[in-house]
Length: 171
Image (cartoon, rainbow, N blue to C red; front, side, top):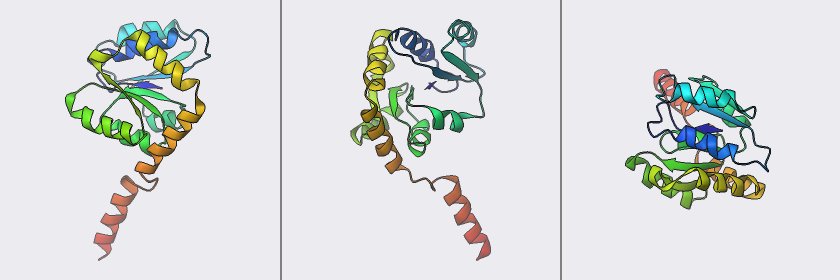
């Protein structure tokens, strides 16, 4: 799965698509997720239509389902970290803003993701090598998923908030 947020100003989605298409020796399929206002949408749609192994999703409401079926996610830091953790989804992460770096580095240290660097640090060949490395090592992905899952309990988030609100109302 590939998702660099709704707008992806740096066009990392296109870079990821090219990196995946370089994996000739591996039978890789990918769900590509972009926002409706992605400035590169037309070129991404055209490129994905040429690649049978990539399915484009624009402004999807099925993000959780896509995360549940993915083996690995390539994406940005930020709030999506927590969605990946609760989904136990191993991730290769590129930070697209400075405020994502500390959290991403910390989650990398905990084994919940692999921090690839900032947008300036990555390129098609580098991403392709990283995808090949991790996709060919299922035990690493399994360990990363377990580490990610240990950070955010399955009953975290909305269920806990609702439970607390209901308890306040009942009191």
